Length: 136
Ligand code: IDP
Ligand code: MG
Image 1: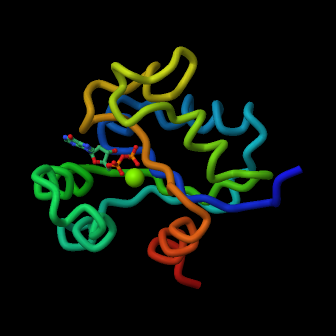
Image 2: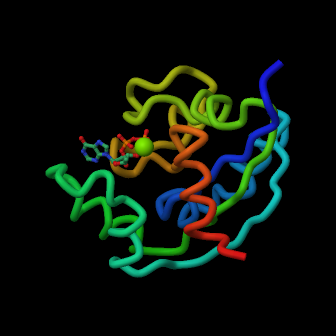
């Protein structure tokens, strides 16, 4: 059995704007995640740049940071056994058109940039990302 882990999940502006946050949270809860902390916030472009620093050399970096700071988001700490991978699975592929049936991105994603959710990609990055939004 995998270890109890925490991961950072973000419901992105496209999903919050369409009032999908409750439905998305329900999917997490129904899949055995505990929502340990959550808050609805709007971040600045410079905070988004810090958060997405690993992507700073990518051609889409500026658009990505403009987008994440364009409206309210819901940030959550999700907890369950193997939470990091389990969250990546329930989110689905980055591009909603390639995401599997039943995943959040398949259900709600609009495009590769407006793909409704973010999830940490490793236990190490989950710790960094959780600390970024929940410092105490
Ligand atoms: P992930 O969110 O599935 O982990 P990453 O490769 O870490 O995907 O990319 C971070 C975010 O950047 C994606 O969720 C998506 O919104 C955006 N993104 C990734 N690749 C592209 C692209 O080729 N064009 C535009 N946006 C992209
Ligand atoms: Mg990523």
